[in-house]
Image (tube, rainbow, N blue to C red):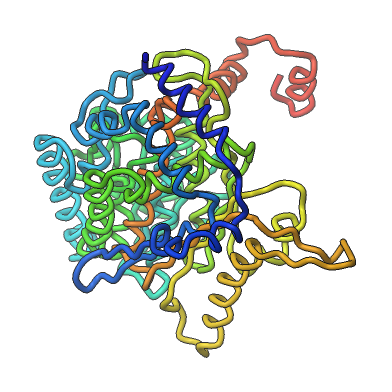
Length: 509
């Protein structure tokens, strides 16, 4: 049987399996919780994470079916290519070596990553020691993965204090940059410019305005206050940054997977490099697990099995993530890019049309805020939405423990209510139940546990891509709009009547 035939046979088998309810699944298998709820240890003194997928409609038959699909799609081979530094990004002829930044990958790539991290550590130490003058603020300018990752990590990990205050700016809207200016003193501010190519128009325009702000406010040498984070160091030199303040990262590290590289410089500057190293270590523990664990015992792969069950077999077009922790408020935004830019594709590795849906729309929010905004649809709407709940056993605040107790009670109650439902003679007060959710519960939100959470979702995204037979490492879909915007700027394009009228109305024609 050919590979394509094996894949089709696996999907056909899965589509024909029975669909018991969650209540029936729990009633019919006394070992269900132990099979699908796993505590994962991060290492001595680092605590652990519980991954509970038992409230998802996975059962032994579906797991066996998805394991057959993974075999048909050569999951083991693709995974080996990923960790071996092979050109798994076939459309761009590149490897995808973000795990090497965490110490897991091809030996030469790991050695290069360690050397580049040492360079980052040295610059961070020099700044902290005052070698570049007093530095109290960093305005970090990037977009996409160059901004979302640092913003998430800084928001999550610096609420108890930081060495240097970091303000992340991504949007080309000048209001975003002005808001950062308002929080910083030019005399004690450095600028980080994060761009893989060092040509991204939004980033470079914001960077130019930041230099002007420094100069207009009495900084004699604005370029002397700039750190460049890039895979194109020669471009940064041409732009005016001194080589000693250029922190390169490899071309094989993609933007949305780049937080582990020099793009993590603002995190290291805010926390200290030792904390950043712990962040890398937490991710590496997940890397080791993902690289060396087979079948449904592999936690990211198990999560991907559930993702495909709902998206491919049950027609769910969205997946929600709710962080019951204010420190993880940016996690849904981060996962939107990670999952939708990676797996929002319509063709397979070999360019054939994708047979079925690709990535669902990822969305979410923060509990308990979201309960009072969107959970009505989750409980009683006509659309089934698989939900991930993420929480920490240890609180992030020093207030009355009642705050955190109520927060966790609400988190666990929502998953229980989605599953159990409640019947009523008054149908407007009836809850159908049998609605899926997973729960990720960390002992405490630390650099290690955050690193592990992000790495888990990276590998989950990759596993989904393998099951679908697509390349998760290119992102050509973001380019067309940029090309048209450039054409507008150059006055080179002819548009439809609607776009032409809008340009005229805004004075851009």
